[in-house]
Amino acid sequence: MSGVVPGLGSIGTISPLPKLASLQPEEGHDGGGFGAILSSALHHLNQLSGGAEQQVGNLLKGVGGDVSTVMIAVEKADVAFQMMMQVRNKIVSAYQDIEKMQF
Amino acid sequence: MTSGPPMMSMLESYLKLNASREQTISANMANIDTPGYRTRDINVESEFNKVLTGALRPSEEGADAIHLSPVFHQVQGLMERPDGNNVSLDHEGLMLAKTQLQYQLAIQLIQNHFHQTLSAINGGS
Amino acid sequence: MNLFDSLSISGSALLAERQRSEVIAANMANAQTTHTEAGGPYRRREVVFETRGPSAFRLALASNSEDHGPTPGSVRISDVVDDPSPPQMRYEPGHPDANKEGYVAYPAINPTAEMVDLMDSVRAYQLNASAVAATKQMIQLAIGILKS
Image (cartoon, rainbow over all chains, first blue to last red; front, side):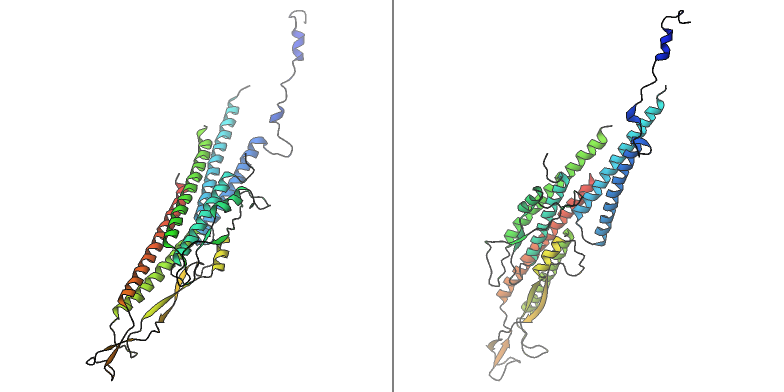
């Protein structure tokens, strides 16, 4: 058989697709890189908005804290929220791009 | 890149210092007729310098936890009335105007900072 | 430390100055009152200003105070006292309040001095009212951070 089509015998030596080491989940992480990014952003956001909420409550009760501090905390939480929304959007869009890829 | 506290913390500290000063000035104005009352003030510039040089950072985490403890001083050079009160209407009015403007400046810088951050977050898509 | 505390402090001064001007107005209105229910002429009255201690003020500024009492640095009228000056005696023998020598005791009130005092009180009131406006503007600026 190898005489009919020269070089056919060498097809069998094509190596499988190289492992994309960077896409492998790291030890101890479930769900891979995207999940970790999202949950870390979420955690940061929760901290900021929880703190902001408490400060607003204190301000309304008339206890301690200054208006400016509270406003800044609220704005920071808002910025963090928007950042998380953008991160989420990017991740979803990247995921959809990957889904569309056909092999 | 400075090794001092982040921009937002610095602006917030500057803002708080000016608010403290405003409160001190309000107290001076309120006591313009109190016998024996002496005008007091805080030096925003030198207190802010302590923030810039990182002298006020606590050792534990939380980069925003700058603890302000402004030092009060007696204002010199004011005329004293017979009852010992030295509060000057004009002096306090002037200091109040200056403090207001500095406060406004800090607010504006803070707003700009947030706008930039938001632009960076939202404008890239 | 709180900008709202500044409002309390200025507010206390507005109240105190208003009380002071009321006392002055009463003095002026009664400058000719030769007898009162308590007997004798009207006695001129003065107000005594008192401030909340400076040490409490310093402490409150450094911490987040939850004190619901009077804000440190604020002022109040602690007392209204009678002027101990002796009454002015004027010779008016036909006056119903004249004594046996024919003198009437008038309150020791100088209208001009009272007027100057009143103007002083008004100026202090205006000063503290401008402090309220300044504090209010600063609070509104802070709120404006959220309006971007």
